[in-house]
Length: 392
Image (tube, rainbow, N blue to C red; front, side, top):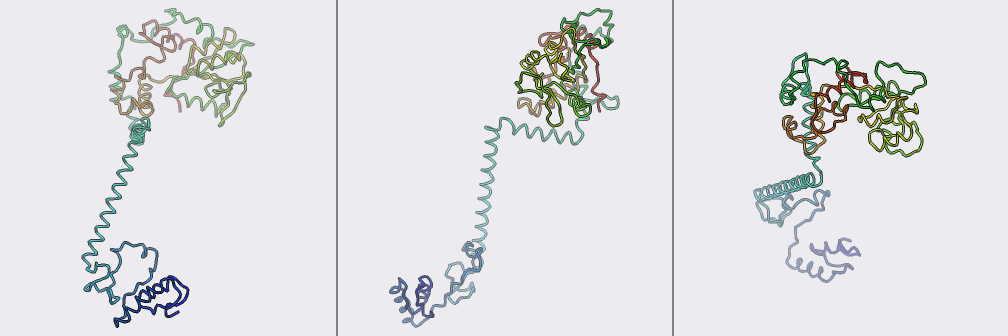
């Protein structure tokens, strides 16, 4: 009621504090009544009014942002306020100090987040942070057309190709090689497995023989384009790495994402052993066998059911430069290297007569003239050769 009476604990106390009669049934009746009686006996009525907050924003605002209230209920800064901050200069300084503290706190939080990010990248990212920066720079260069400068355009040899050619080491016998020699006159002897298990390109297919095409896929030489043509356009069933993980004891044709493949893995030695056990090459199930391995795949065939081999080749320097850019974004040890540093310090990663070594089986050590002649003869007699520069 008007005198602060009733059972409302909160409102009764508030009225008593600010000069009510002190009546009612609240629990602080005696103390509040004495306070009200004291105020009345002094002959004055307090004029301080505590307005209720109009919103949550006002209720939770920092004290320095409140408009000061004086004893007369006004906001005149010339008189003393209950908050002790009546002057505008004092309020402005308090607000400025609070904003400065808030900015400092935000800066501290940002620095902590940055430090945590760097720590995570260094200790748990396994080099992915540096690789991401390198990839970003590489993608920007590609978007700007910088990679086209690495290739020979309009018959003009560019700076990168010249630099790469200057760093290529040629053996002494190379100076006498003016043109491709007459290999037929040299009577070069091939390895027995190549001679017997791969058909000559000039030989006709005989009745009753299963001669499965074998695509020897040289890395970074347009292999994905060739495989897309065979998968999507010709709808060939391929035997490749797509069949990895299968352990059935029979050959099955599976399909995934529009690609049809046999359930064998031709990219590993163990997978080729399983394929040989299942008579992959003589079964006639796959339309084409695809692998980056050469001699081990030939073990799938025999003299009666030979391989019909074909390959797509690319300029060795272009392939080496392409491999450099691939390693740049996938190998943490190469990230940040220039092309010159990569060639000099890349070790086994650098292109090293890939085609000659795989065709002759000389995977390590020095190569001689007889290795080059053997590789040439294999390509001349046993392979249908395409050029990556002719691919769409």
